[in-house]
Image (cartoon, rainbow, N blue to C red; front, side, top):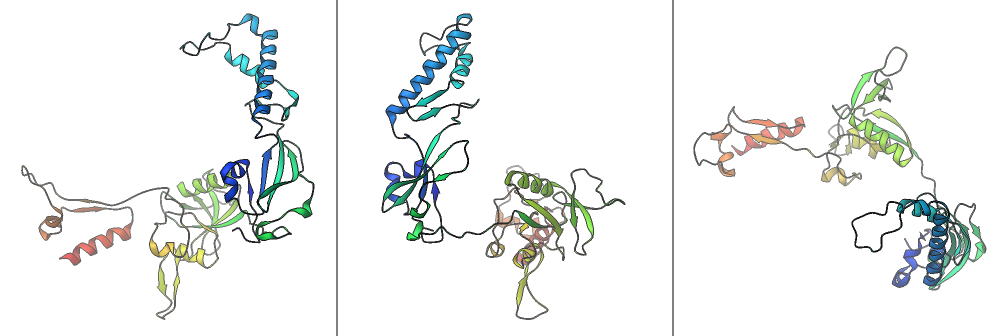
Length: 336
């Protein structure tokens, strides 16, 4: 990623101290004006405190208690928040590192940044930017060296923020209901979706709620359709031939019919070879229950458990996935 066709844009931390020797040639970095000048920062900090304290004394100070006499006290300074407010409101028009001004949270809103380019191991200023101003001022655009020694910026590509989402009917993750006569959904939080024939349906449930949250957080739009064959996905032969293809949800993603799967899809090695899974949002498993043997000091060992004596009608298999239920029973039958 350090060759031509890529761009590196980093913060000051990535070019400070020993980090600079590992920085790739051609990166762009933003650097606070006077950011490494410790004396300038101390000078400006003292100006902020002095101006804030002067304002505090002129307005609220005389009617409020003074600060604690030492730090080793459990008694808070009752007027401390008023003093802090006066410091936040302090403005230093011509500080050592530029204009000093804060927002209500105490963050600088008038920070002056330099834009630097790493050329032959040295940082060269090629522009500047003032926080809150627009646009960025690039002094010498033709002098920028990009990764790989390129003199022209990478072309780049546009990533769509509208996704085709495929899901599957599976309670309580995705409920599928018919629309009302007017085409709307009965549930207010239900999403419009389409089935395999293109008919409008109403999709709701945990997965749909999660999809809405993700779209809001990551700023994308989407459309939902239900998988055509109503399967999660398997790598199967086509009509008995030697050719194999993915079916179900995974098939829609692999074949380009969908950009994203939002469904209770289990992570497995075969699927991981074709698609990228997110981290699990729910863990689930199966339990094996056997009849209690009322005998003091009696324990069932794993070897005893698989013996036919303990696999009787009294044994119950609990699983949220029907296929896991059947495969477990089949496996136990093979043991015998």
